[in-house]
Every structure is written in structure tokens, then in C-alpha cells.
Length: 452
Image 1 (tube, rainbow, N blue to C red):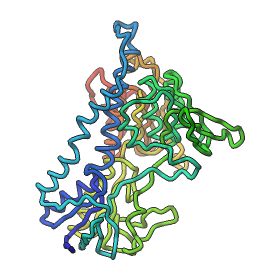
Image 2 (image 1 turned 120 degrees about the vertical axis):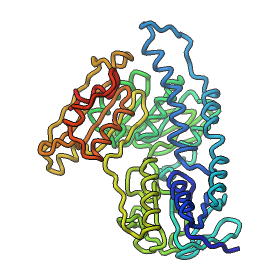
Image 3 (image 1 turned 90 degrees about the vertical axis):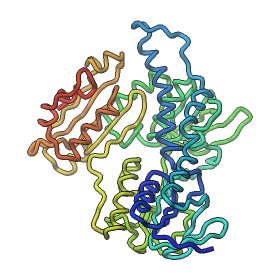
Image 4 (image 1 turned 120 degrees about the horizontal axis):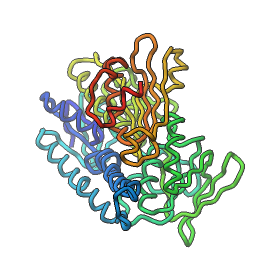
């Protein structure tokens, strides 16, 4: 059966939901298709469920830091099964809620794998053919192939978030967001955690100095971080798994584990879409070739948003922003470009680390004249109040304009404070503007004037 639409959206995550609802509200006939449960990565397999587990780990950390400082809770512990059950109180209802929202907006929703069969047509598992004036690829991302023997034994971030029991020995392959965040959760749930990171340090997208300060917490909670260590294979044994790696390109390393987790990056989930049938071109890395309007350069009927577009950072607010840009271009013509200024990024370790704007290295490469203030300040009240030993910042301000061009924070509450620096960067607030703002005291934000 063939059905016709103004817009067909492949995916059901943040970008897909924003775009489909806005187009339907504008009176357009819209369909969405996703082979996975409706809701997307952030709501079901990423940001939101992860943060719920982080909350449990944070509670344990709060108790441990305050023990001997007026708090007594010697038996505080994470009951993993109960924490996962709590997470499911959020994730469980999401697919049904999303399906109901699609129906309420008059959007046809299909539970099926979509693949292109022409420039303006997709075919679904089951045989339905959907033809549309435009098609939006918002299919999200998937774990990147690792290319070593035994990679099939690794579980994904999605599977980790569904574990009924937490194994005792866990190896995380990779050193980015997933490795950092999941290791902090698992270690505080009393697992023995090892991170094998090919690069020279953890969290390569964050300022290296601040990551160095944060590593104190990894050591404090017993996480074994091995950098410059490349995994060469994983074997299944009678006792679990044996992870074979090479350190510094020479020394052989073996680690025994009950669970091995893929934490080595994600790529756009495009392989099953049969892009060639639509004439949608990709670059040498497999990424979609898009113009400045998030439109395919080879098929004007096709647009992309979020992780599938890979134009901005792989973050939920970027996905939403992309979707809004695409919808405006569909309704008004190609006049709108995405604007990724001042998008904060946070790794929800405990404490968190956050960044927005230019790094020190980027600012120097651009030849900018800037002043920089950087300091590790565990003696400031914000840290002392919660007995946190890691608190620091690095802030960059343009010498000529007094505009904030970059901010990098680690410590308590920085996941919230970074938004104020993001606001300044996106809307052109100067360092003086921030200094003269009267923030509520005592809060994390009230430290901002001392960081400038």
C-alpha cells in the first residue's frame, strides 16, 4: 500500500518529535517511522535514564563526603535492582506517551524499519510504501564498530541501563562520556571498574587541565583508568571475559571481567536506510553530505537533524534546534541556518565537568587575544559546604570586546552554572555584565564574578 505525506520522519527521538509535531501543527500531513520503541536515545537509552542512575550514585557520594561531618549512614548503599526499577518508572511509559502524542497531533506512526526506495519514497518492513514531498532523517546514532575479535561480547549503553544485576568486575572500552559517567555510577554501586582508553586522557572533548583535576575522583573511588591502551580482542571464558589490550603500543595487558561495555563512541545510524536508492551522498566517513540548511546536497527532498546530521555536537538541545531549523526551512524556504553558539556540554561524573565555547587551544589557534583565569579552588565555600575536594575553572575573555569566549568548569553544581556562561556566549554578554549581575547567594552562580 502506498500512502502520501508532506513529510516523513525516520526516527522518533528528540529531533523527530519536534519536527513532526511542528509540521503537523502547521497543517501538514506527517508520518514517523522507527524500528525501535518510540522516544529515542535521550529519553529511553541515554540522557534521562542515565541521570536517574547518577542521582542514586550522587546520594551515596553525598553521604560518604559528609560522614564525620554530622552525617551517620554507615549502611548506605545502592540496591541496583531497585534503582533500575526507579529508572523504569520514567522510561517505561515513554513509548506509549509518544504514540499517544503522535495520534493527538494527527501524525501517522509506524513501528518498522524504513529504507529508501526512491528520491521521495521509503518502504517499511511489512511492505507499506510512504511517499513524501520531503523526508527527514532523524534516525539517531549507534555504537561505532570496534573492529577487534570478540566485539560481539560487549554490551551497549542501552543494555547497561537495563541490567537487572550489576556484575562485580566491569571493563569499559573507551574514554568519553559513557565511560566516565557509567564508571562513576558502577563504582559507587561497589563494582570493580576498569577503563581502557586508547587516547592519552579521559574525556578528550573537555579541557585537559580540568580533566586532570577530575581524575582525583576516579582514583578516590577506585576506578582503574588505563590510558594509551588499545583493546585488541575479547574472549569468553568460564569465569566471564578476558580483555586483551596493548599499552603504549607495546606492553601486553589482560583484564578479567564479568561484563565488558562499549564506550568507544557512536556514529549516525544510517547503514540500513539504503541511501543510495535516494541519491543521498555521504562523505568518506559515512556522514551525510549536507548544505548549510541541513539539506542533502544531492537530494533536495531530504533533510537531516540531530545525530544523523552530525553538524553540531551530539547533544539533545542540538537535536531540537536542528529540527526547528529544518521545519522553518520546509515551511518558509531555505533561509535558516543552525546556530550552535553557546551550546554547553556536560559529563555527569560526580562531581560533573562542563564546557561551553572555545577551549584554550582553539582560542590560541584562532589567534585571539584573550585573558584567561584558571584555578583549582576546593577551599571556596561552594566546595567546602559539601566537602568536595574537586572544584575548579578556566574562563576565557576576549581582550578587545570583553566577551566571554569560553568557560570550563568542574565541581559541584557546574552542570547548572555552565548554562549562564552559555547564555553569555550566545547573547553577547560581557564579562562585566556577568560581574555586575547579582546572583542568589550562596549558590554556585554566585562564584561567577570571581572566575572572571
